[in-house]
Image (cartoon, rainbow over all chains, first blue to last red; front, side):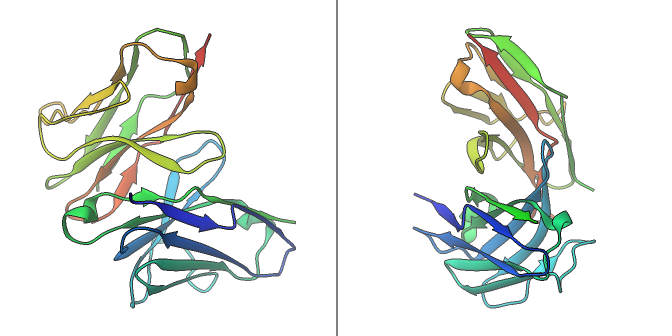
Length: 117
Length: 112
C-alpha cells in the first residue's frame, strides 16, 4: 500500500516552454502533498506544501509564479514549471501523506528528471 | 529551527562488513525520525522509522534507535551487501512545523 506515482519519469524541454509534472497517490487519499527539488549529490529541498482544495504554501525563495502547484483532488497534485530555463533542470520529487495518524509519514514518488535545453 | 546532521560520505565497505551511519538532530517538540534510502535515479523509499524516544525501527537488517538523551538516530546493519549501495537520508518530522527535514545524505558503496 501507500504507492505514489509520478509522470513523466523524465522530460526534456526547450527553454521558454512550460512543463507539467503529475503526482498521484494510487491507493490512499493524500490530504497533503509535498514537492521537493534535488540537485545532483545533494539532499532534498522542500519547495512547497499543498493541501487538497487550497492554495499551496511555498518555502522561502521559491517563486510561486514560476512553480505552479495545483492539488485539485485527494489523489492528484501537479507541478507546472513555467517558462523553464536551464537552471530549472533538476530532479523533482513529490510525496504524499494521509490524514490523521498517517500525516507524519510521507510516501515518495519515483521522481521526475527535468532537463531544459 | 529543526535540523538533521549526518556523517559525511562516501562510506565504502566490503561485503559483510558492519555499517554505522551517524545521525543527530535538533528539534523542538516531539519529532518522529526516519531513515530513507535512494537508489540511483530513483525516488526515496522509507527504510525505517521511530516515533518516540527509545523506539527501535528495523527493516531488512537495518536498525536505528531513537535516543532522546543524545538526540541521535544512528543507522546500523550487521552485514552489508552489494545491493545496499545507495544514498541514505536521515530525516525528522517536526511536530511543530509539520514538515520533513532531511539530512544531507550519506552515500554507501559496498564492494564485493
